[in-house]
Length: 371
Ligand SMILES: [Zn+2]
Figure 1 (cartoon, rainbow, N blue to C red):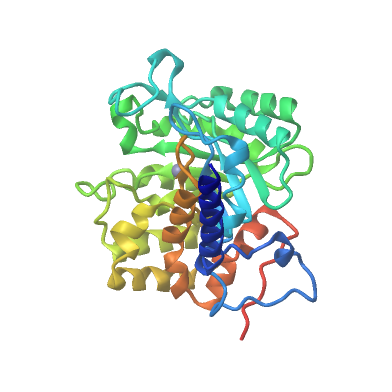
Figure 2 (figure 1 turned 180 degrees about the horizontal axis):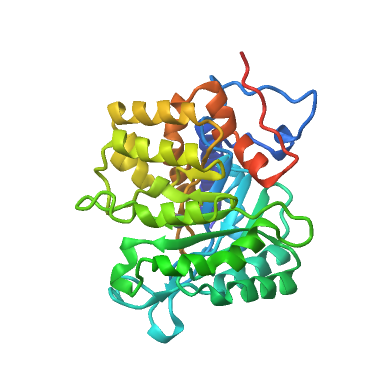
């Protein structure tokens, strides 16, 4: 008995000293460092972490089955150096009618957007207010193919939770990964019918800043590289005044070989044409298929340095039950590797969060980079 206890104590001490040596994952960051203040300390890139401080893409709810308990999950962020988090549900779940909980058991089970996750997330946020991180609640329920009820459901959430939600997404315009689960690309004719909810996102009640909309829209696939690009272009040209976040820069597991030059040309053209378009560089697929290769990475780094105010960071972590702090930390680190190569200006805006603070009208301020 006694030996076991001693062993447990020793193990805890060993683990604690291991963790404290873990500089690169940013365990020493606090909200106070991001308070706008004349005495704000500068950020030393040589000794402080390159990991991002904003996770603008975190799924608190899985496709099916149980999630990491909320009270445990909100304890993952600060130790990973992340202080600002978008609380996404998920754009689709196995429908109640499908009787499914797992992909492995239901390779063709029907998946649909649902308001369930938003209610659960907002309820949890009310129950467990957090002081060491800043959370942004996001409505993930919107079915872009059935836009008629979206405003009504936004009102329902606002009535129930007060004006707690300040973002919408991640919602799916076209996501090939779900084609086996009854999801289809949004019919372009439907995009006109988004007008009422897009207007409400632009000017929500209660003096909130315009609510950004995070959209998953595959550009195409390795077989048809730009097959779906017209859909995102259609949205941008129809709603140029809405802040729209294009997640994963339009890439996906279905498209791992897009020519970087062609991709960057498409994105540059759209960023130049639509000043309210923002790119989200979350998801490890971007690292594994693109940024990992030095020659490709250099092209994207040069691109981000050219558009330092138009990029947001994120993990695309999906908090399915069983995932631990170390899993979240790993996603943050992998998705942050590209930050090491950014110019100081881009690093401050992107990795240290200034773009996010500007977009959300938050009073926080990214520290200047030490010279
Ligand atoms: Zn996602």
